[in-house]
Amino acid sequence: MRSKTAFKITGQLIFDALIIFTSFVISFFLRGQIGDNQGFFSRLSDFMGWYILIVILVKIPMLWFFGVYRRVWKYASLKDMIAILESVTLGSVIIAVIFYILSFPISIFNINFDFPFFPRGIFVIDYLLTLTLIILSRFSERFFNELKFGSTVMRKKRVLIVGAGDAGEMIVREMIRQKNSEYMPIGFLDDDYSKIKNKIHGISVLGPISRMESVIKDYSVDEVIIAMPSASGSVRKEVAVKAREYGVNCKTLPSLYEVIDGKVYLYQVRDIEIEDILGREAINIKIPEVVSEIKDKVIMVTGAGGSIGSEICRQIIRFRPEKIILVDHSENNLFLILEELDNKFAFVSTVPAVIDIRNKQALRSVFKKYKPDILFHAAAYKHVPLMQLNPKAAIQNNYLGTKILAKLSIEFGVKRFVLLSTDKAVKPRNVMGISKLLSEQYLQTLTDVKGTRFMIVRFGNVLGSMGSVVPLFKAQIQSGGPVRVTHPNMKRYFMTIPEASQLVIQACIMGKGGEIYVLDMGEPINILDLAKNMIRIYGMEPGKDIEIKYTGPRDGEKMDEELTGENEELIPTEFKQIFKAKYNSSINNLKKDEITNILFNIEKEIQIDDYRGLFKDLKKIVPHFDENKMWSRLYE
Image 1 (cartoon, rainbow, N blue to C red):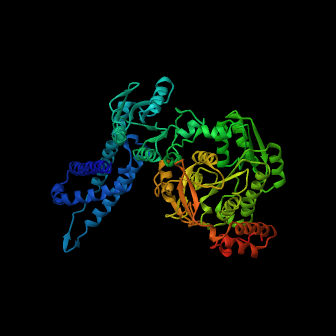
Image 2: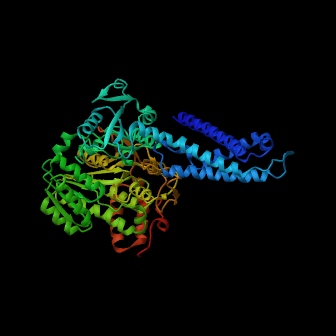
Image 3: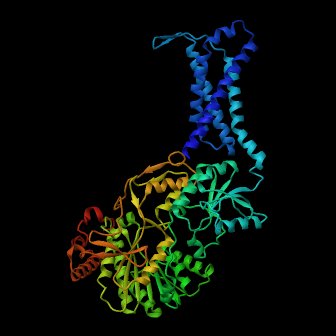
C-alpha cells in the first residue's frame, strides 16, 4: 500500500517538474517577444540549463513543504488552493533573490559564475503560468469527479460497506428502502472470496478489504461503513485508520455488545470510537446458569451509579431479578441509572438507596428490610493521584466499607458476595492499591464462613469509565490538544465496560467461595499508542494536527500493571476468559490468624489516627510500603 502511495507521489513530482519547466520556457519566450530586444535570446539562452535547474530545485521543495503532495485532491477546497498559492509565491520570491545574486560575478568551488541580469517580466509571467497550471492540474480531479458523480453538496453520500454478511445486507436494504436516506451504497468489501463479484440487492461485492484504497478512488467514495458487528478490534482499527488515511470518514454498525444489551438497533450507524478498535471477541456467558441464580432474586449493587456498577445493573435485568437495590452515595449518579432502568428498559423493581458504604446503621436497615441474595460490591474510591492526597479516606472507604458490607452480608444471609478489585492491588505502589489489597485479604479470611460465598474479581482499566484516560484524551482532542501522556513507555490493561460486567456476573455464578478470579485482559496497551490511535480516529495526525505532551508519571503510578502477585499463579477455569489466582504461599508467609489480627489493628489505628502503629502494620502486608512517599499528611 505504501509502494502505491510512493508511486503516486513520484508521478505527481514528475508532472509538477514538467509544469515548472514548461511555464519557465514559455515565459522566457513570451518576454522575448514582448520586449523585442536585440540580443535577448543570445544573452540568456546559454544559461537556460542552469536557470531551469534552479527553478525546479526551488519550486518542488516548496510544494512539498506546504503539503501539496499530502492532500486528497478529489475533495479539493479553498484551503488547498491557498496552500498552492503560498508555495508558488514563496518559490518565485526565492528564485528572484537567487537570480539577483547570480547577476553579480561570483566564484563557487573554483567555478566562476557571471550570469547576465535577468528581466523581471519573466518572473511575473512564470509565476502566473505556474500558479494557473498547478491549480488546474489539482482541481481537475475534483471537476471530473463531480462531472461523473455529481456535486458532493447535492448528491447523496456514496458509501462503501465493509462486510457482506447479514449485517451488511441489512444496512443496504435499509438504505434502499428509505427513499430519504442520505446514503447511496456503491459496493461491498469482504475477505470471503466466495462472495466476491456476487451482488446483494443489486450491489456488487467489489473485492477483499485490501482493495479499499483503489475502490475509494475509483468509485469516489465519501464514507466507509463497517458492517461487521462481531469483528475483532484489530480489523476495525485497520479499516478505520486506512479510511482516514485515504481522506474519507468511517462509521460503524454497533457491536454485538450494544445490540444484545438492547442499547441500539443493528442497522443504526454511528461514528467509530476507540472502544470499537480495542474491543475483543464477544463474551458468551452461560445464560441458563446465570438465569437460574439471579431470576426472582434480590440483588444489591453498591456503586450502582458508577461506570461498572450501572452496567452490572443493565446486565442483571436481562435475567429477571425480583428486585435490584441500587446503593450509591452520589444522588445524581443514582438518579441517572434509576431513570435509565425505568424509562429505557421498563424495569421498575428498583430500590434507590443514597448511602455511604461506611454508614453501617443505614446499610443495616436496607439489609434487614430487603434481605439481598447476591451483592456486587463496585463502590470504591479509584483515582490513584487523588487517593494519594487522601490516603485515610481511601482506606476507610475501600477497606472498612468492604468490611462493613461483608459483616452485614454474613449477618443477613447474603448467598454470594462479589468484590470488584483491581490490578493495582498487586504489588501496590499507591494507597488506592493498598486499600484494595486490604479488602482482598479481609475477604480471604472469611473463606470458612458458612452461608455466604465471598468472591473477588480482579481486572484492569475499563474503557470509557468516569475519569479514565479515554474520556480525558477525547476531551483533549476535541478541544484542539495537546493530548497529555504521562510517559511514552507506560502500559495498561484495558477492557470494555460491558465485557468486564458480563465476566463479573459469570464469575459470581461460578464461585464456590474464597476464589480470586482474574479476567483475561489480553495484552497491555501502550498509552502513547492509544493516544495516537484516538487522534487518527478523529481524522487528525499526531504531532501535526494534535500535539502530544509528556507530563511524567504521577505519584503512585507504575509503568506496567500486573494481574498476579509473586505468590500467585493463574490456573484456567471452565470459562476461557476467566482465570483463578492460586496462592503458592500465604502473603509474606503470614498465617491466616496473623493476617486477621493485622487487619483488625489497621482498622483501629486508622480510626484513632495512630499512624506509628498503622505504618508498622501496613508494612507487614506491604513490605515495600514507605510512609514518606506513599502517605500524604495533607489534612493531618
